[in-house]
Each structure stands twice: as C-alpha cells, then as structure tokens.
Image (cartoon, rainbow, N blue to C red):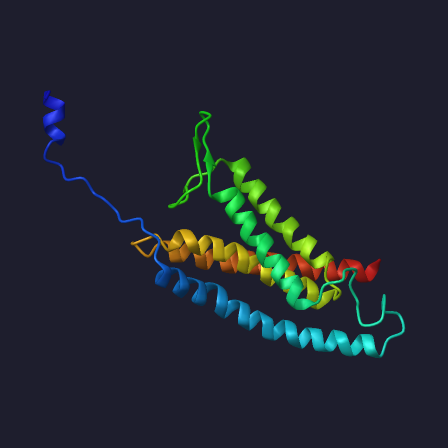
Length: 200
C-alpha cells in the first residue's frame, strides 16, 4: 500500500440498507396518495353531482347522460389516469442517462440526477397522460378533475416506491412535493381545459 492508500485504510465504509419496505411504502402511499386523493374525490363527487343535475335539465348536452367526449365513467377515468401516471414516472425516472453517454438502468434505489431533457419529457408525458384520460371521460368537469387526481396519485405512488428504500426520511419530502405539485398543476390545467371547451 502506498502513502495515499494507507490514508484511507482505516476509514470506515458507510453502507446503507436499500431493501424495499412494504410497511414504509404502504404508510407513505396512505399519507401522500390515499388521504389527498380521498379529499379530492369528495370534492369531485360534489362537482359531478352538480354536472349530472345540469345534464338532466339541459337540452344542449352532447349526449344523454354525458358532457364529455369519451365513454368512461369517473372510476374508469381515475383508474386509467392512475395507471398512466404511474407508468410515466416509472418509464422516465427509473433510469438515467448522463452527459457522457452513460446509462444507469432501472432498479432501486432510482437515480437521483437526471439530464434536463429527461425531466422535461417526464413532465410532458404526465400532462399528456392526464389530458388523454380526461378526453376519455364522459364528464367534462368532473372527468377532468378525476384525471388530474388519478394521474397525480399514480405518479406519486411510483415515487413512493423509491421512497420506501430511504432510511433518512428525506424522500418523504419529495413525495409530498410531488403530490402537491402535480395535484395543483394538473387541476389547474383541467380547469383551463373546462373553460376552453365551454368557449368552443
């Protein structure tokens, strides 16, 4: 051993247990996905009742019992949005490409550094997933908000999988920011979509 090697010979190596924890995942998913989605669902249910009442008393609705363009009810809209949100996160954030052409493949823990183009593509995919789900709903307002809640919940659930391997507790902050950020952004986009469709 050289002089430089002996300098590090007695330095302890820090190891971190990266095993997936089901209890931790379920707890994170309950707090950051289940609770906000349940609150959102109660608001969406009120909006849906109002929208349904409006359809029953209106002669200008697109078709009997619907205000949107698709065939899906709220449950199916939410499930489609959830699946697409989850796949968007897993598809873009479970691997990473670096500037030197290197590639870090899918696995846990997920990478923490991504090139800007990959983050942008992930965000665009999430927004597209929300719009596709909303378009497939038979309800314009409630369907759009259901798509927003489902997409945000799916993305955050995928994010929670990686947070379940974290022993520091800091990943919970990222999950909370994901819930708040995607929830507010997608809801705002769906409200704009609803206003724009009324003009058309």
